[in-house]
Length: 418
Image 1 (cartoon, rainbow, N blue to C red):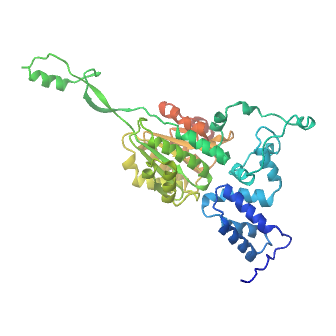
Image 2 (image 1 turned 90 degrees about the vertical axis):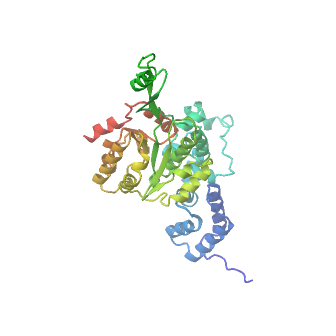
Image 3 (image 1 turned 60 degrees about the horizontal axis):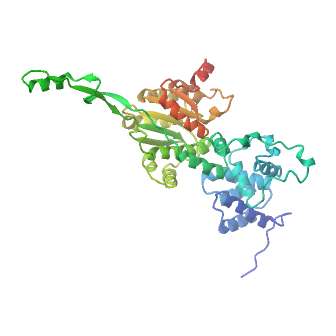
């Protein structure tokens, strides 16, 4: 076997070893970066050369990224490892939450914590001993938020800023959440010995069997029925982190007993509408989400809210919105379709449902305003407008369902529209 020639790459004697270490960080971050892909990456870099960083980035991305949801992790680890040395300092500071340092410069971007955990895997991240050097501790401040329980902090942490371990713990908490609903009173009645309504028909029939003498007054009560829960979840690229957490919550609601929902219907939408209801019935949440991901082919793609709502109103609304259904719409409202058509479809959806609750992760920003055309078209046609960026926001849904007058932040934002 002929000996292979070395890589003709200038000033990069350790590039092969660096690519191998980079692949190990990707593997720790959840990507499939085995030895075969490392060899493919080395050969691809050899073929493409190392003249442009952009070319180098795309070559490695083509070798290591197989699914759209892996791009965010790849981008952050690539940026950490190859581009900006100061990011290492930032990530080290982020992994030491008790110490305020470089992490104060800016908030973490999506997937940065997960990338940091992967890249710093195996490195001792323990905080230095304060007694070892008294002078070095003068500029260190202890973060007071550590006095709060870790679970309480996790409930208020943005899904997009969670590390791998934090997201795993968040999913465990979400699995225990419930979304109970009160029953609805039907106009139909049933016989009840202690009912609140008199049943004159049964009273007269009973009297006729006794020769016309009324001996007892029969009573009746209204029947109760349970509404359906219909969830429309945006799975576009801007909603990726939030939609996965919401689908975990939806799986918990679908499989919980005694919450009162007649049935839970789940739909995802990005560039097209997909019904994933039957997949949410699987007992194992990982199997359920894997099947739902295989069914929905537009994960982390574009967004066409108007077209997807049109498909839902045309094909599914009469099937699933009967019996006073409650609709949860989870989206950021960023849509490029015609806003007038989007508003008309939202109005139809609102009129077909008992309550329409919109969860928008953008509401986490204090300065959020309905400036986007899609948000302005959708907002007037919802009953309640609430945030949906963390566990606490999901828990707040119970309040929105139990109180008919709960409108969330709709009133404030509607005032901004005028």
